[in-house]
Image: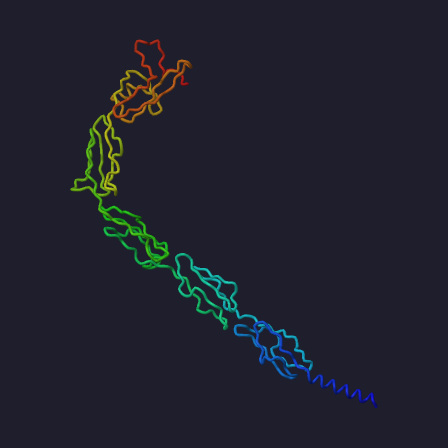
Length: 345
């Protein structure tokens, strides 16, 4: 009788032990909450996992019942962040981001010449939307270009209608008699304004003086102004040293004041010289004298090597220096060999 009683007693203890088991507090899942959350649960009690705001479930069981074993089943539920719409492209600008998932933030910037019309950053919300709304990069515009006093707008082509965009240009010029001080080209800047405006000033030049042995012509006016011109010339046997035409500059003076230089008399009666690369008889080529600036090369002897070489000279305002190495023979010294008849060294 003892053995059946022992079996009955053991069976009762087993059922009491089973009935007394409880489930522990369930495991934490990333980005999820448990309802209700307690330190232990009696067999038959239910719990529900739900994803936190901004996250959505991806597979797995959400509802569990505490079993008699006191051990929760394996939970395969996953909560993943919501994904906001793709926002990686901003026309005429740039987007900085890591991902488009909740709760990440993206930032915006515009290329030079454009400005952000809207926010410079946006956050992916719990609902999977961007907040605030995404911006756009709008072009920087400048007002109509300014014009200085005594100036006019020479060239200007706005990018759109009457709007000038970044890097658009406008070209200015001054009215007659006025000179421009500063850059004649304005540029629309990244700040929405134009570069520095030049100034138009009236400029007068003194009447140019007549050069010695020459003449000057200029407009018959009571005054000569910026960009007015004067022409110079010389009398016969004189040559103009400088430009024939000069101009009144923005500094109130003439671009040049040429002078008249005298011609040179040729004292050599007989000689062959190099002129513009050719041999010529100096007494024939320059029978009326050499003009200022003319150049010739005389032949000289190298007695040791029995050959010739040349030395150049130039007529400078009535003076022609004959090279010291040149020897002019008398017409009676017919037996002497002239340097220009000898082979060059």
